[in-house]
Image: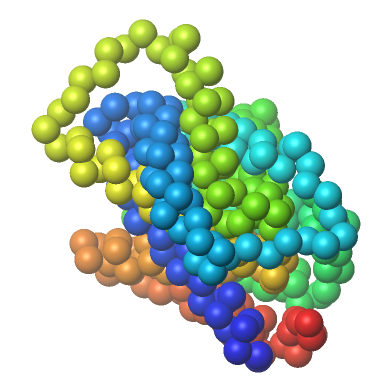
Length: 156
Length: 146
């Protein structure tokens, strides 16, 4: 495995760790306010913090920037925050339904994995096309089984 | 019930779309600027939907301030890292690895106060995930030649 690949892999895993810590804090906040209000606050703080980061890092070297030569910037690239924010509302619906937390999480993961495979395979959202291989499907299934075991063990 | 299953699956699609779209923006404006747009647009969208329907008053409790800031700040870095990695290794691999990191760290945090049967089952779950990471890691087909 090339060195650069190793870095991307470690960073992705680290992003998952960040997600766990973030959810820990945000769920505490949600507990003290409400899930949607907590998300609103987290987004607001995030926007302010990111803005100050951008200003501080606005020297050429520190802000990692890779221009795509052959592609145009499209206006909907700016709208990724909408499905991101929508997630909070949909989660609130399913977690409070008969599905409960565990089944909701599992189905959300399943949706994420299948949809991301489809996006890679068909190049949706202008992604570089990466055809699905058998080993991709194997790995997704194995990770998914692992997730189910972990998620449902919480009920023990 | 079926409707809720669909909504939960749709939620997964929403999460992936959000990550991919923001990563595409990151390719053009930089990963931190894209993270800023992600949070700003999300904030405005949520404000538009929540504030008109919520009448509950927002009471600030003593324990709030730290919790208030840290989640949002971590989120900025999470989105930025996602934006950096996703265009390079593809969306499905990013999803698998991020979810794996999330699950593994959650198990570690959980195991601090946990019982044996729970820990055992989680251990099985963890071994599945590590096996998959190892498999993808060693499979030559998956190494980008770029």
